[in-house]
Image 1 (cartoon, rainbow, N blue to C red):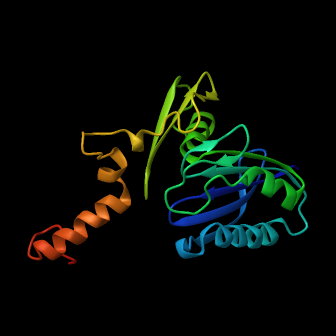
Image 2 (image 1 turned 135 degrees about the horizontal axis):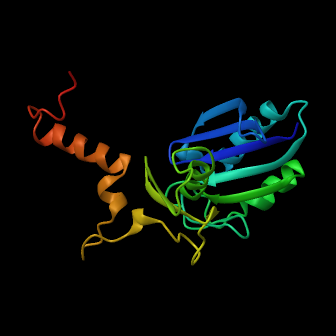
Amino acid sequence: MANFAGIEIGGTKLQLVLGNEQAKITQRRKFAVKLGEGAAGIRRQIEQGISELIGIHKLEAIGVGFGGPVDWKTGMICRPTNRGLVWIRLGNWLHELTGVKVFVDNDANLAALAETRHGTGVDFNPVFYVTLGSGVGGGLVVDGNIYHGAIPGECEIGHVHLDRNGATVESRCSGWAVDAKIRELKTREPQASLPDDR
């Protein structure tokens, strides 16, 4: 049976999985992203995770979901906001590391595709998916395929401007934005119900 590796690079966590062609995950590794270590730290974690996951298994291919704009044709990371991976050819590096085919795309695009093929999006067309975590992203699947428009970030709804002051969907609604608002409220109005830890 063929084995495939999946890698998710998010704003706060890095996950690696080993699975088969039926989309069944057989092994998993999870790391906390150390923002201070930048791209080098993330590459070290990926190397460690791949070494632990592959073991005696022969890989057919690797799929990478990155939490930000990517050039899916070249596997290049475009304009990450917090990971120091800008303009890194992640696909080339992983191919050199493992010798197998590597596919890199935005994490929301891949989540949309997964939901279309194996989740709540089955039997729907088109399917639009929104990620809401440390950032805000979007993915669109039309006729069973990821919609790829202009590079980078064809469905990056988190970067849509909400006003003339530069506020974006992500700056208002992401996990980090909500956390910052709660922390500010705890300082400004410690007796309010929202910051109450009980």
